[in-house]
Length: 126
Length: 385
Image (cartoon, rainbow over all chains, first blue to last red; front, side, top):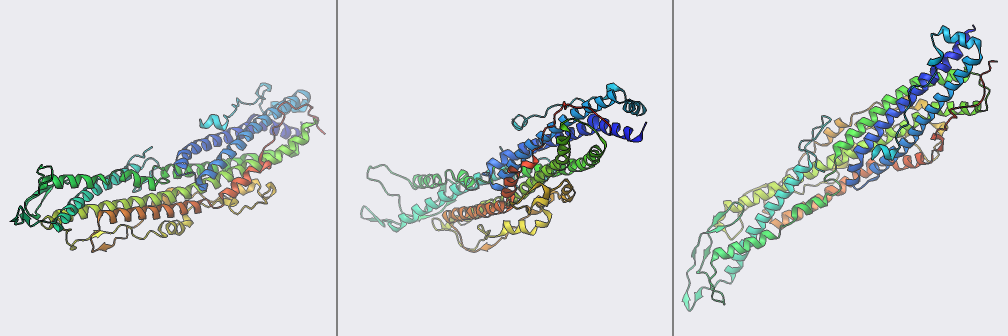
């Protein structure tokens, strides 16, 4: 078994089952933080007459939330794609299967962890 | 929404609360009513004295000291020298006590609504929870640092390895490589914008807090001035209906406000978070100018709470004035002072927001940050070279 095959398999496996889902989860946590802060800022902003310093910050938070949410979904999609590719790799390549066993990984381990779709901005701040 | 006295969570401590401001402005209204009532009663008697008839039914009237109760909030006895009370055309005798009661009530009525009116002048600051703004800014700065650090630690290595080590032959290969490049940079840039937003809010919150401190302080000075003036009327009751002497002093209200709030904010600019690496961003923004590595340039979080504490130490510039103001002079001065504070507070909040509108517009147009959605079930097979 070539080391390069083992490395390829390991990188794919880790990306699909851990790194990308972890990244999605981390960004989802950031999303939750931003929506919480947004709600904390909202009422004082209205009461202060919506000056640019506050109103534009709220607008940035709303936009960033939308972009980050899409990033979460994007990483989740990427994780699913890479898991599918990894499964195909071990199913069609004997050396990949050998690498999988050498790494102590079972075929059933090649799957994404549960990944929840983050709420939309309106859902998060309602 | 009224913030609890003494501030709330987050360990903040500052000398302002909406409840205290409401209490002191309502107290101003009560004191103003009292003083206006006293002044109206005194004015009525002074006017009467000018027209005093020294003869009644052809008999000479001898003025005498006539003690009577002035029905102020804390009633006190005054000792005007007056002739016999006159009789009105209807034949109903009106005592001097009736007169003073009616005059006081009419004068006091003039102050109705003063508390709410004063609060309305400070509308953009009263009931604004500066603490919530600043605490939220601290939280957002923290989450940007936390998640930005994780982002760069996790993703760069994985993406580099994927780009070098896989051999997928499907049509989605090129799209996936494009995705890897965007995924490596875009989320970090998004967080930089979130950092810029918290910076703007932290500054605005500090400016609002400083303004609230100033208006609270001036309201308390006004309350003290009114209390001192009313006390002077009490102390010089034997001079009634003439105003008390000028041998007393009171804390000045209307101390020059110009520049105080903004200068505080400017003097503390080093402790306020700036807009971060995006602060000088112009309209020529492009993704290739802001890579994921910029996240490492995010300045260390500077606790806005410290800034807030410093900003809320506006010193009172107490000036002793040796001339008794009337109720109208006091309330006119309070009004002008509040308007000056509000004007300067608005300017400080405006300054806090400089640059944020440009950033918001840049973000709105930043199509490069809209991450593509990879096909979660790509066609093709893994074929090693």
